[in-house]
Image 1 (cartoon, rainbow, N blue to C red):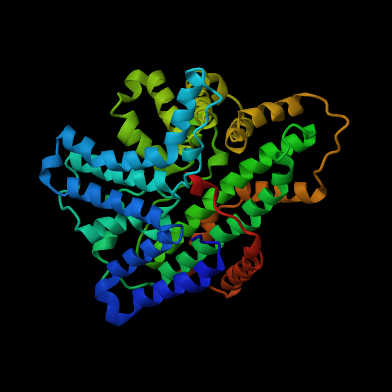
Image 2: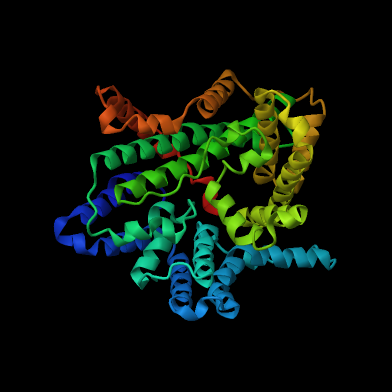
Length: 456
């Protein structure tokens, strides 16, 4: 089930809200959200729901007692099943095919594992399980939640499939206070603003760009230089508004039920350098990698080694393919390069820094869009003069790209959302504007697509 779907917007969510806010069921709100989350995820397949349930039950059993505190063996056992499920569903085919290639049997392909349908968001909820187990190992979360509370923390449907990656400490109070929760006017206003802007970003911008880019990207070797540049920047905005849109919707849905989920984006394309970019893009993943991998590996004491490891794993986390690993190594090179040359870089005007960083990041997204053969064809088309090929970009293409750029760089969504607070509502113009934007978005629901990060 996806947010940008009529069944979710006009059936699933209204039913969940009705049961959640029904006074006679207020004592069972955590069960309402838990069952709803299982239904939400189970819609993608019962096998995937079973995978989620097994991981939840296993981690809870091994982390509920005090014997995990400081006990590395118990920690390893606790995270073994979630990691094994992640490896089986996401990486086994990639691993076997890579091994067969290294052994000289490149013609052998393990199609059985390629045909396994990846559970949506398995990387996200696996990281939450592992993070909780590590926190318990470190002696945190002394007041261990009961099973239903822990299960809700892992499976809460607004952020289950594509984040934000949430720490238990960030939602523990909201879970404990569900019975007493009352939806305030400011929470309702903020929720509507987050959801409306998120859906608009996804449906009107990301999906429109996708529909324009897909025909060109289907034949990457047969594009003109102009089309190639359009693909580079168009896909960069597409993946931004796609993922940012999901995160906004997730935060808005969380506010409806009393959860203040963490912000996942802070205008990343306005970053001055690659290091700054990773403080702004997918912030909860960056913090997770920092706290649970980078620091334990030694942090800045082994900077170059650790940066390479972290970003290579970050790339592999995004997808089972060498193109994703190369994407991670590419960003490691950007961050390390900036660290080595930051004095010269920082002397450039801010606008130049932003433009250069945006260009580097946008080129990197090509590893998400193409496999190696397609990437090679695309670069060849970009560098060569395909004079016999007629370009496909039109004024419509460039108009959508220009609108996306203006919204990305000049529009502050956080300011728009804060302006919806009831205390600032002096006219009915803002509510009418949001209503109009929501209705406009609904008109294009039928052509909307899955979120890109569902595959991760």
